[in-house]
Amino acid sequence: MERSSEVMGRRRPLVNKVQAVDELRDLAAQGTPPFAAALLPAHLRLVRELIRWCGTLAAAREAAGLPDGRPAPATRHEVIHALRQLREVGVDIGPERLHVLGEDALVAAAAQYWPDLHTARVAAGIIKTGRWQPPQGVPKRRRLAPETAFAELRAMADRLGRTPARHEVPVELSRSLVSMFGGWEKGITAAGLPLHKARVNRGRAGN
Image (cartoon, rainbow, N blue to C red; front, side, top):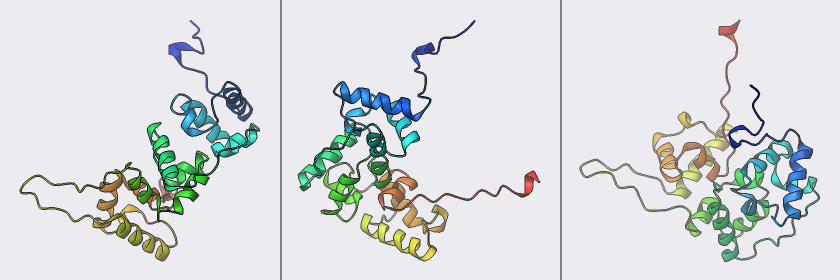
């Protein structure tokens, strides 16, 4: 028995760049702005396909002939408002994520007021800065301040010539980043460093 392509309510994936760009253009004609804050979360599938085919949402807009006419945020308040809008639609605020979502102007605007995106997120109330308190009787673990953790991580990256892997940094630094950001890779992204890709040894066993 043949099954419909729409079985179980699933939509067929967009099969090429032209189809994805056309859908973005159609949505814009219907009144949905071609920006992450307007497209997400309702059009998450489309956003993923556009990034897959075009690399970034900004490149997808360009391919669709949809110029970004938004004025860049000019004040702290405008930057904070834009960051909160993106967080409300589920965007995990980080330099790489904002780049692929076509929000480079927002990142540049934030850099005028804060040393990094973590500090900007704190100012926007997106990250809580309260320290974790262990249960009574359990010794407290020292947690580094964000600026200290970032400085140590960037210094190690300078020495290595790349982003360090988690096992290459002191335990205190690793635990601090995980505690503050909910994961090692999220901490790396908040520090403005590219993610470290471990090399896989494909050799010996299969030969």
